[in-house]
Length: 91
Image 1 (cartoon, rainbow, N blue to C red):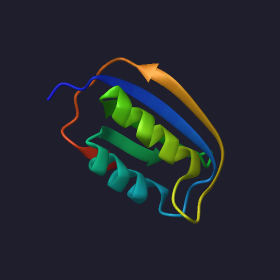
Image 2: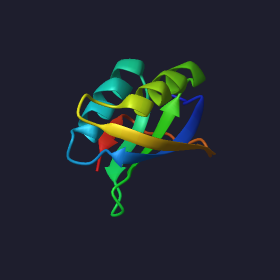
Image 3: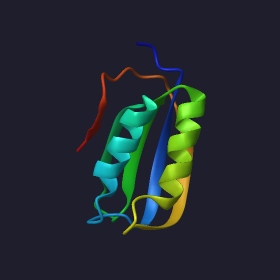
C-alpha cells in the first residue's frame, strides 16, 4: 500500500508514562496510518506517521491533546520523505 505522505511529530509535555504511545498506536490504526511512536531520552515522544493527508491531519489533531493523562505543551511537525510501513508500531 502506498502512503500518501509522511510527517514527523515531536511532542513535548507530560507524554511519557501516560500511555501516549499505545493510545497513539490505537488512533493511527483506526485512521489507517502507518509508522511508529517512540520515547526520546529528553522526555518527548517522536511520532513518524504515513498515510493519506486527511488521516495525518486527524492524527495530528489528536496528538495535540493525547490520551487523558497526557499534558501536551508543544508539538513540532515536519514533512518527511515517503516511506512504507506495514503497520503502526511503538518502540
